[in-house]
Image 1: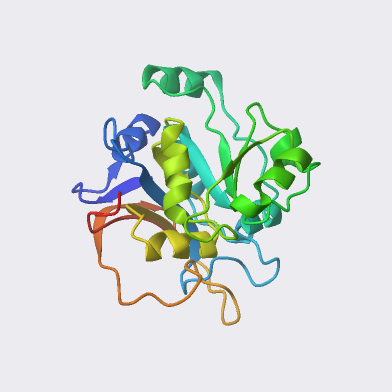
Image 2 (image 1 turned 45 degrees about the vertical axis):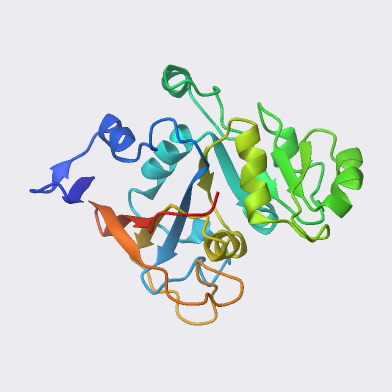
Length: 256
């Protein structure tokens, strides 16, 4: 894997270099939200055959994916993506646990799922194949029923003014209240769109798969159109074989 920009000369990177490159701001006093996606060269979030991101192969993405999870306090994901991609608990190694402990983090980052109705399968790997209980962030009107049905998870009501919906600000506040400020959002497009529309995205890590998906496939941002383009600043570019791994920063957030 080569560091194309800003490092001159295409420097080769080892794992420790990746950890330094993707480090979160030290001791963030608010949730710092990093969104990670893999997309085809024409912007599709899934392949046309299977409809899953696993059908897109971006060389180097798996290694960066592991680093991003290691650095995060929590992995945030929408319910649709958790179901479609068959999420389970985050995997780790003794070496990763040691590095996380040295940073003052829990040994394993929990998976936090945003689900308005809490309609998840209690037999899914998210609940049965994990070393730490997941967090379920649900609308207030569904919190009690969800907690009764999914007793292997911590269920948190995260509604704003509308008790039937989930609110991005309330989601991040609930994570911060648990000391989970280094947030890695792995999608899907609807959750990314909601966070983006409310000014809660700090960074986008985008792995470009050297593939073309064609039409009829969802893109990385869902939901209603934004009120205007959101500027990004390029922070780094890595290259591995024919794949590119891009990292962008958004404008500083003024949202608490």
